[in-house]
Length: 362
Image (tube, rainbow, N blue to C red; front, side):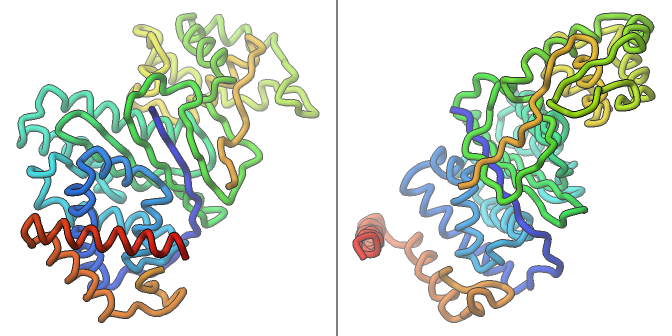
């Protein structure tokens, strides 16, 4: 099953103190290794792709519960925590914030070649690019991506955690992906999209309601641009339930000739190939969408696919200051747990499970 979810977070200034980051790495490593030992690789990947679980892990490790920095700091911490164990776990974490996000393909290639996954490298790089293109270009919700982490396993499973920024509202939106069996990237691939912000105007080309537009965009690109330009000057349509007609003044005509230069000689056969064309960005895709809507009288979805729905303290003292002694004790307990014999390990795990049951009964 293909899953995707979104979380909106306010942008916060400041940096994670080095002492806290190191503790996040150690405690994060211990938690993730226990999960791997108890439930296996796929369950660990699935949990990292869950926005609620990821948020809870960040809170447990002491970061600001509602800060956009939780995503970037926690992403960096789990990458550093698991890197020494990539080979034994068969799980690899690539990418990060800014420049690191741009290096994702090189990192996928590096780890893939190092551990003999050569036949899958190209497909994984394409998946990484495609997911980013969908969230940044095909779903135009006002958030520009600046953080991208691609996680993959030696048996071909993958997950993505990425985040976009809206400089006007000073909010960031986090996108999680988990691939179990991907059927269709372009027909309502969203599941459990959570956000406190709902946009009035979103271009969602991966909604089922946008199927006709996607088809007509591909049809457009097989026609000479001169023909399309003449048709546009004769066309005006009323749609989107707006009070005014959509006309040429709403269409960035200057963008369209450049699109045809890239596509006309070798038009894309499907929407995925269109998205992956180098240099075809969000503005060009919006222009193509408006053109298809004007000429063919079809509609793209404008509905934001969003549904409404602390153990150690926090870095900024909320809900209370981090207790370093308690934090260190938790790390020590989990690290010692991982070093015990199998018999001792199972006994301690049983105790932890009993504690969980106790708190559920309370």
